[in-house]
Structures are given as C-alpha cells and as structure tokens.
Image (cartoon, rainbow, N blue to C red; front, side, top):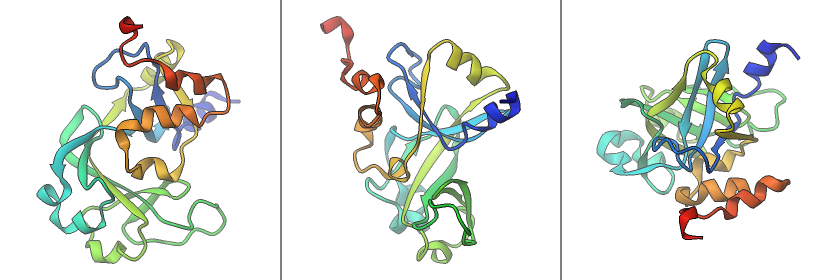
Length: 195
C-alpha cells in the first residue's frame, strides 16, 4: 500500500479519542474525518452539542436540523464558521449516485451541505442535518503522528453517527459496537482515579 493510498483512506472514518488523550478539545471525542490526504486532515467533533439553537444562528435551516436542534462545536478551529453535514437516504450503497443540488458526498450517505443554498432545495432529499461551528484540523503528518502515539482509535463510521439523538453518549456507543477488544474500552471510567 502506498503512503498516499494509506493517507487518503481515512476520509469518512471516525477518530475516537483514547482514554489517554487529555487535550480538552478532544477528550472523549468522536471526530468524523471529512478530508484526509497528504496536505492534512479536516473533521468535525460529533459529540459536542452547544446550548445555541440552530434557529438562533441559521434560522432557515432550523426546521431541517435533527434533534437535538442545537449547533455542535466541530472543533477548535474557525469557531465563527459553520459547516452542515447531512445524510441523504439511499446514497450509502455506492452504485449510481444521485446528484443532489447543494450536497457534496464525503463518504457513503454522508455529505456536506451548502449552507448558502436555499434550504427548500434540499428539504425533500435530506434525511438528517447537523450544523457545526468550527472544525478540527491537522497539518501534513500531524494526525499520523497522533495515531502513532496512540491518541486515537480509527473505526468505521455509520450514517447515524452524525445524527445521534444522544450525542453525549456517542463515545461509548461507537466503542461498544466494535467487534474486538476495543468494545471493552467503552467501560473505561470517566475518572479513573475513583476506581
């Protein structure tokens, strides 16, 4: 496998913070990688809801946002910008992809929404929508270094990950569904010193 193939293969996968990752921006986080290549990586944290309602910042999109209808903190970079992620039902199987105006596939049924487009253009196509303030970014080789240090588990994503109705429990649920010893990490205590 070439280095380029290896690097680009992580787009659409989840980074799940290991218990040893103590960076407050990423502790117990689940990050969906939207882009990963030799130039670096970009993703959004899926399990950091904020108290800000989607209607408070992007009123036209509020009706399409899934529960909870709040903005999520996608990461520490560019917190004043917004990204929309949505699932388009029927798009996960591969095959001939339907063109959906205002939506660009990232992986399977998951894609980025053009928040400048009129929401009514996409309303009939979107299965679920999440709005993220900011994103998570890594420079060239930075994520690979963190992976080598054991900061992240890399696992497959599922379309329901971006629209989990209980995002605070996503870290445990993603780990629990793994078919390996990794599932046991889901039982790791929030505060190991209390053990």
